[in-house]
Structures are given as structure tokens and as C-alpha cells.
Length: 205
Image (cartoon, rainbow, N blue to C red; front, side, top):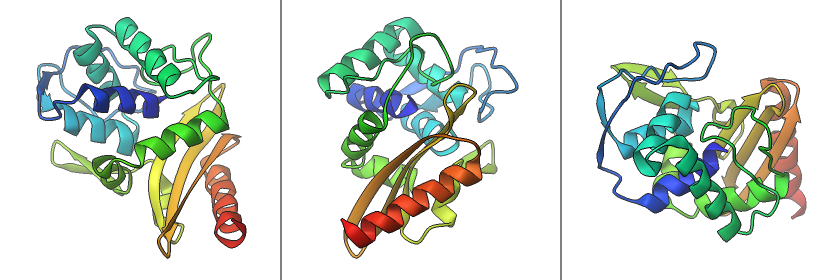
């Protein structure tokens, strides 16, 4: 779902627009990068935080900035999904946290990922192995980047209902492959499954 959030943010443009962080009341169990209320940050920094370390606080700040509120932004997400032909995707919030009605499929995530990877700034972001905030380096949530030859993206996702998920990309000899794993039991299993799919694709496709 954060990939869909990213698409709407990118479509909104104005990446250097400064955004003031509101008081979000983020659950300490959520993935976050530690944004501080009244802190001013540009959209592109918030987008990188959301993509690299899956920061829910960054996703919610972007949603409020672009949509006016999170409900309006979710409507923009679903409109973007329809325009892209993601017929089995429905967003319920900008973070991807479990919420009634939210859904997607491997096919839709592959389609969305492939479209996003056509953007140079997006590709550069999701290939990064860390984000930096408040002078601290925070490791990327995507362990595949340091464990698979040629890995260059894309995004992890983990919730109770969805399990451990991974949209993965790797490039070898000028060929880029995108695979998606949904519903794994652990971070290790999603990385292993994505690696197996990528190995097969580079050999057979």
C-alpha cells in the first residue's frame, strides 16, 4: 500500500515543498522514523523515509499534506489504482496497516512496482540501504538489498493479516526482474522466497 501512496505523492509533484509535521500520535509498535511535531521537511525526504524504512509517520504526513486529510488521500490512492488497472487493489489508509476492506494481489503489486521503477528518483531511493534522520543512519527494511546479487529494490510490508511481504527487484547484465512475495511467515522466509523467484527468472525467463 505504501507503493500506492508513493505513486500518489509522485503524481502530486512539488518534491521540495516544505511540510510541517503535525502531532500524529503514532503507536510505538508501528514502523516510524521518529518525526517531531512542528518539524519542517520537504516532501522528497518524507517519501524516502516512507520507502526506505517503511515509516508510517512519514506516510501519514504526506497523506495529510497532499490530500488535506487521510480520508481524501485514500480516495486519491484508489483513483490512482483504478487508472493503473489495479482491479484487485483497494486502499483503506496510507500506511498499509490492517483495516477492513483493504486488499491487493501479487499481479497488482508487480504492475505497480514496475511502473514506479520507471522513475529514476524512485529507483535511486529504493536501492538505498539506509535512511538518515536527526543525524542517525537507519537501516533499510529491505534485507534483500544486502543479501542478493544485483538487488536494487523495492519495498517490504508486514502486518498481522498480510504476513511478511516483499516487492523485490534485481538487475543483472542489463535485465531487471521484479517479483512479489505475499504472506510469508518471517522476514527471512520472504527474502528466501524472493531470491528463489529471482534466480528462476534470471535463468528461465
